[in-house]
Image (cartoon, rainbow, N blue to C red; front, side, top):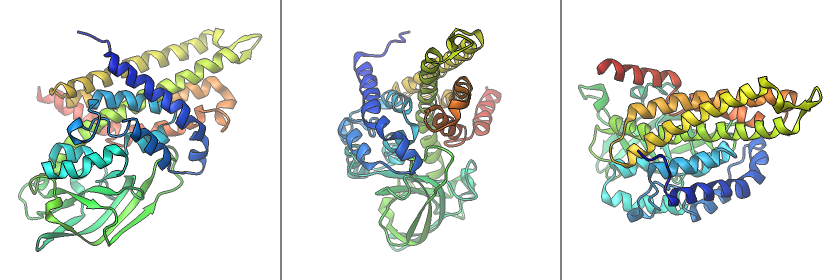
Length: 381
C-alpha cells in the first residue's frame, strides 16, 4: 500500500495551486461580487491541460484520470471554488459522452472540451426533479430522424455559457420500468427553441454560471443520443457516481483554504497580550479542522485511485461526498469564528468560503441522498 503521489501527480498538484494563486486569486473578489463568469481564466487553464484533465489523450486530453482531476479541483478550490467551477466543471456532461458515447461522438466533442474551445453542461435537474432524477418530465418525441424536445431544466451549471449540453429526457414513456423511459441526448446550445435565463443572487459560488433552461420544440438528430434508447437513467447515475469524487475534492480544497486563512490569522491577531493561536481554544478548532481535512482527503484520493484502477467503489464515493461536504461547512464555520467579527466582512476571504461551502452538501446529491445510498449498500451486504 503506497500513499505517495507519483512525481507527475505532485507536479500537477503544484501547477494547479500556482495557477490558482496567480491567475484566479486576483479576480476572486470581483467575480464573486459581480457574479461574473471568467472565460479568459477558463481558456488559460485549458492551455495548461487543467480543463477536462480526465479526458484520455486519444480524445485530445492529457489523461490525468479521476485522481489527477481531483488534485486539480482540490488546489483550485483552495483559492476560489466559484471560479474553480468554471475550470473543473467546464467539461460537465463530457463525462457522460466519454462513458456512453459512440466513437464518433467522443472524437467530435471531447477534444473541443479539452482544448477550451467548447464549454459543456449537464442538463439533468428540473424544477420538480432534483434528487429524484426519475421525476424528470422533459420529453423528446421522435419525428423522422430527429427528436423534438420540450421541457424545463433548473440549476444548470454553465447553462448560459455552454456550447453543448447533455440533456436527460423521456424518450420512451410507455416503458414498463420507470427507469427505462429516459435517454441522454447531446444538444448544441445554439439550437433554436432553447431559452437560457441566468440565475442571480446565489448565496455562494457566484462566479459560476447557473441557469434555468426552457426547451420549446427543440429539434436535434436522433444520432445525438448517447448509447441505446432507455439507458439514460443508468447513464446519469454513473455520471454522478464519477462527478461526486470531483465535488468531494472541492470540499477538501475549500476546507484547506479555510485552514490556511485561519492559521495565518491566528498568528497575526493578538488578544489579551498574546497571539490568538497561543490559546488552547483556538488550537482546538485548528486541530479539528486539520484532522477532518486529512480524513476527507484520504477518502477522495482512494475513491479516485480505485476508479482509475478500473475498480470503482461508488459507495466509497458517496461516503466521500457526504463527509467532504460536512468537512467544508465545518471548516468554514470554524475559520469564521477564529476571525471573529472580521470574518464577517468582505475584506477577509473566510466570509466567501463560508458562503461557498453550503452548496457542497446540496449539489451532486444532497447529504441525505448519500446517507440513503450508503445505507442501502450496507443493508444489501
